[in-house]
Image (cartoon, rainbow, N blue to C red; front, side, top):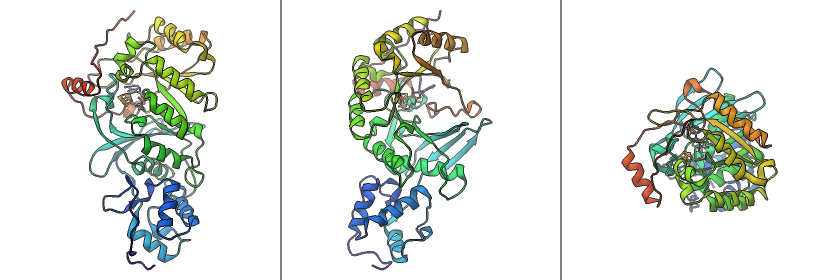
Length: 392
Ligand code: SAH
Ligand code: SF4
């Protein structure tokens, strides 16, 4: 085959097309890439070579793939591309945290946060533009849902971040952990997220261990079971309330998947992942969910699971007109000591990148009015419930 178009062009894998009809190789799982190479009449080991060039060395130009024959490079140039989202803004905090605003093809933008620490570097990535689930304390939830990200746009965030932070096209990896805690509900974009995570785990791509890729969910029960079957990575459950009455308000999807069902799904998940691979997140909202009685109900909810779980207490990140306030350090400490006394491993999450508003899970977007929010909830069969403050 020469550099001209081949007689039959293999059909692009759905969801991986670049804007010009070319296949975006960033979006193909190792298996899909092998299948596509097979359809091109190329050997499977060529697909592995390309996988390594794309994800390990993170080249964007087929001409840089020097161990491929020129004829194959030309063929790839004609049919495929390597295209990640574009960086529109790159803000660096005094503590080293970097927040990126990324622009997607066809409009829309998402945020990604890089958080370096002494012993690790975590990348917080987005899975959707906006989110339909309308949690009351979440700025992404206020925006409403726009669209799902493609696999290429999800894995493209890791590809891009590695290039940005290592400042080079090479074998070195800077990022040790990936968390789906940016914009969107990852389990409502299931296939693209699983495909992207598969690439993150693949030894010929990013080679991260299952424990270092965390999917955070507000509790989409059937999808938790599907994840257990397909790709049991680490799981973060956004709990935020110890009883259904309060959780129905803060995390409205609880009206559909109440705590009893959610905890049962977590128990099933715990059977397929190593000890400690499920963490519970609890955002600390002053006077709303941070009283001693909430800590006590939480202990009761966890019951016999309490030795096996880890709870992350997240200081609420305020945003304009949220209606909530971050719990004081004292209240967070008080809550934590009640849980600790019951033997629960409880870790207050450090706030990072405060000066650039870069905390993971607090990615500010545009606001919509309340009427639209109620209508969106109604579309999902959920109701708008007002929160009552009961500050002590
Ligand atoms: N949709 C998923 C993942 C994205 S949100 C989920 O809800 O789990 C990631 C985390 O940030 C969740 O635990 C979420 O509840 C939390 N979060 C959202 N808004 C926040 C805010 N304003 N302050 C602190 N944490 C917030
Ligand atoms: Fe969506 Fe998660 Fe925000 Fe809830 S907290 S609205 S599920 S992004």
